[in-house]
Length: 51
View 1 (cartoon, rainbow, N blue to C red):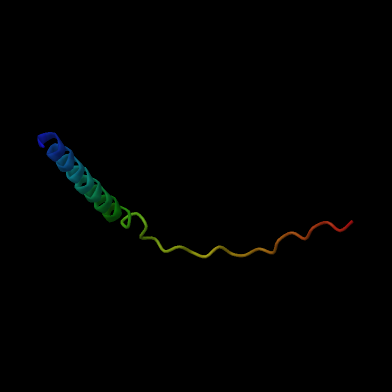
View 2 (spheres, helix red, strand yellow):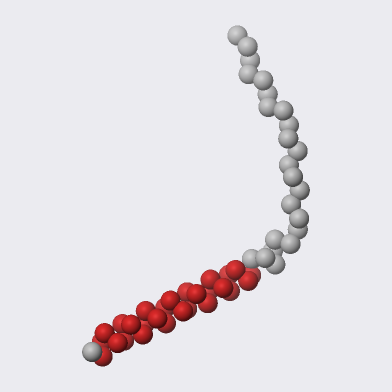
């Protein structure tokens, strides 16, 4: 039973570690995206050449 218990503990530790990494990554990203985005100016598409 000891080996099975260790497997469960390892899995639980791994999932909690991944969850912490996800939270840390999510907290780090908004700091870089503070600048407001400007909308791109729409330019008329070039008309296809009539033949």
